Image (cartoon, rainbow, N blue to C red; front, side, top):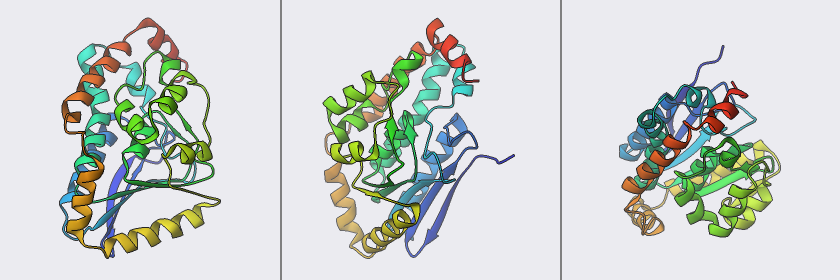
Length: 250
């Protein structure tokens, strides 16, 4: 049985952060916690000039929240704590002084879309379709809404939220600004990611850090805002509708 992990590998001043979970790279609390801490670690590592965020395997990039863990949430505080995990990861990415390149090899759902949106530059294969499925299970993409809306705009974000059972294509995501480049194969994707990361790692790190601050201007309230949003999701996950729906996926 494969085990979940989060690991940081540094090569030629590039910090490769990889996460994995055997259930389609879903995100339980322990993986979220390790991921936020690893991003902070890479941000503080002088040997790292640029970060590449990726997931293990060759299929789904990230299936979002762990349904198995959500089913076991018994009170609003526990629900808030769980969804705060996504808030902590997004805020770690936002405040990290290093630019983060997203390497998205396949489909991404819910919180995984939030991770993609929180990168500074996102590159994918043509298989990297996206879906915001939260309304269909009785909650909503409250925590990730600010970062997704910031990247693709309120119109596209609301379209995806309302059409919660549809996968939107990688080309749609590129057109809306979530993805910068879409490649035919994972091999082409990896070549492009390494090429860009190598170039960025050779640039002035002070300029990169200052530029990142500009990119994220106006998000200083997210430390509070995303936790408030986590409380909304944490309450909704207790509803009879959501509990009944989640049990179908156990």
